[in-house]
Image (tube, rainbow, N blue to C red; front, side, top):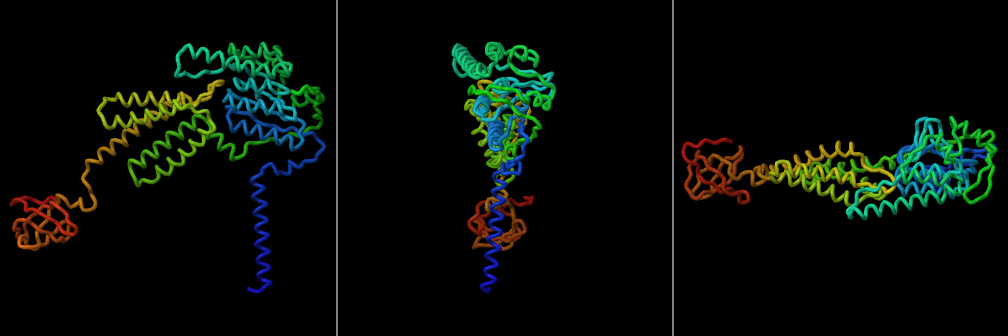
Length: 457
């Protein structure tokens, strides 16, 4: 290659590498968007959606949204919420970021018929502006204490400790937000829930509005007191609204972190690996099971998994295997089903909300899993009694016809249409029937069959 050609090739390679690097950075940092560099004079309202159970991926999404609002110099972050509650750690993480946010945060329970229950109630009250749409409700934030392995009196002490901690945490920000801490505490101590009008009359929220545009219109020019005590006037004249969406990766991880999906991944992974170990060479169940098990292990790092639930599930699997080995008349099978259902109930526990594996999903998954496990193990046990169909062992007990006489030396026999060198302690004439009693390399030891015996094979 000439020097000029070499130079052109190097330049093309360099340009290609730079282009790939830029594309990689663009994909890796999705916030590097034209909207991020928006210099429009119109105030920006960044909208986040808090839908479904509050869990770590959703908390990460809210945290990233608040950070993005700071980068884009947004005038307000609007979080629309419709949630039954969620995990206490994720709730606490969201509240801390809302309280620390340099950009004012408004939480709006919408659309009509939505709810901000349990963990959502605390998130709503932590915002600079708390608003609800008509026909919505909030509250019912009593901590859910899962059954314990300690004595019952200790459970009551634990319940009081969790209630007191939750109410203290609630007071720590409702008082500074100028809301009614005494009434708010009843959502925890008495599991009280509130309609939008009850929450407004009780000074738990600031506004009841029909839609987001109405909310933003009424907030324009409103003076608020930030959590640090500073006064700030919201300027939302001619605002522009932008959505901050979950990334494809976050949506995928959010599905994995769902307790029901996590439980299903755990069962499918265990069944796939179990099938591969008991039926080597099938391949597909092992591949699928390995992937599902790794995804389940990832979810275990995110969810508050109770080790007692995992042990109960393993006990259920062990009982299914024993059911296939011993005649228990279904006792071991029933015990395994009960153990696995209890394991599903205990698997994911949160001291503030009932976020966990739903009973319907647990029943629908455990019953097929139980019968499949027993069926596969019985196949394995039955296969151990089958005669070997390959290799030298295949010839043991097989019958053949002598083609070269046996006795004085090695002769030949025909077995399965193949000629084999053979020997016998007795003299056997050509055409006689023999049975293979031993395989010695490429030589067969045989014995004569009684006269008149028929050859089945």
